[in-house]
Image 1 (cartoon, rainbow, N blue to C red):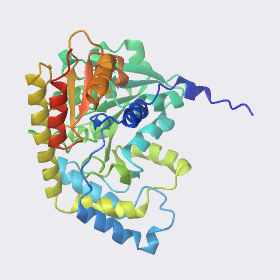
Image 2 (image 1 turned 90 degrees about the vertical axis):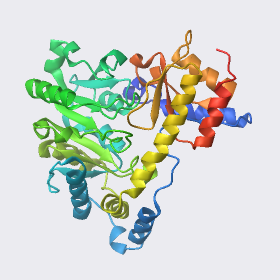
Image 3 (image 1 turned 30 degrees about the horizontal axis):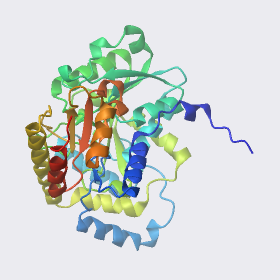
Image 4 (image 1 turned 120 degrees about the vertical axis):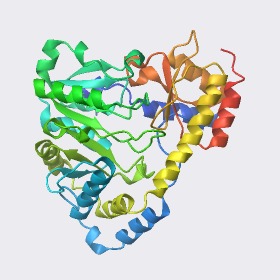
Amino acid sequence: MKISYNQKLKRLPPYLFVEIDRKKKIAREKGVDIISLGVGDPDLPTPKHIIKAGQKALEDPKNHQYPFGAGLKRFREAVAKWYKSRFGVTLNPDGEISSLIGSKEGIGHFHLAFVNPGDIVLIPEPGYPVYNTGTIFTDGVPHFMPLLEKNGFLPDLDAIPGDVRKKAKIMFINYPNNPTSAVADVKFFKKVIDFAREYNIIVAHDAAYSEIYFEEKPISFLSMPGAMEVGVEFHSVSKTYNMTGWRIGWICGNAQIVKGLATVKDNYDSGTFQAVQEAAVEALESSQDCVEEMRKTYKERRDVFVEGLKKLGWKVNVPRATFYVWANVPKGYTSEETVSKLLESAGIVCTPGNGLGASGEGYVRFALTVNTDRIKEALNRMSKIKW
């Protein structure tokens, strides 16, 4: 039998992190002690009080049936309460919030609600690959917005051609940013809102890293006047509470936009497992001391790693948020050559910047998802490499 794949699958770039995992496995089979600074998956465990809430919810028979719909009212109310406390944003749990099976799932399905063949989607690059894959699956046309260091890793909206602006349906933005660790300010968000209003573009802000910050608290896009008219925000408990495997997040903001994604999801899945929603409620409503401890841990790792890189002659900006370090590659090396050298010479896995977009060439991304001892060991190994 000859199997023929959908042409859209052939247009997809290789999913970067699957390829990184493949290289890691090959090295491990050779007996290499791998220090993995590649995929952004927290090594810290989910806090115990959240686990206990999930265990209790698992035992409740009412959580064993199809969950359907926007999510438990209690979950949506917890999200609204958290947004009000954290960002000063008022959300209506009935209509302006809908649960997701992780924000990745929501972002991936988002295009299905709004993009018709030939419509343009504005995508930051380097950036999260799912913004583009969703565009490909809906026969949309990606227009990449370069994130350049000279612009503070913010997209230059003025550089978007006039004909592109008129055909654009969605603009994805992501701050604090993966992979650059940049943080957006009020001025930038205001410009985005004005731009979106003028050209009737839906703004989809991916705020997954808002709680991993070190000095100043990042703001929510939805906290800006006019944001609710033009956009939504994607969020999750994955990075904030070390719950990446639990798969729960939400979309919130403009009710009509939220309804569009919710309608797609009604036809694609049966909702978010209620026991996991109960655990997320506990995470959002209970003491946030665990989040503060998480930030302290990542700050310690950031400080050790960045200081160590600088001593080794690497050029790197000190991240203000996220658990990523976006570093310039050594002189004379490409992003992929740097990644290969680190893996082959030191057993260190990191992400090539160009794997996240053409403008990422000349950089590599390190994820601070190993403990401080392993970070020091990585720096020790790197000190012995001859570039």
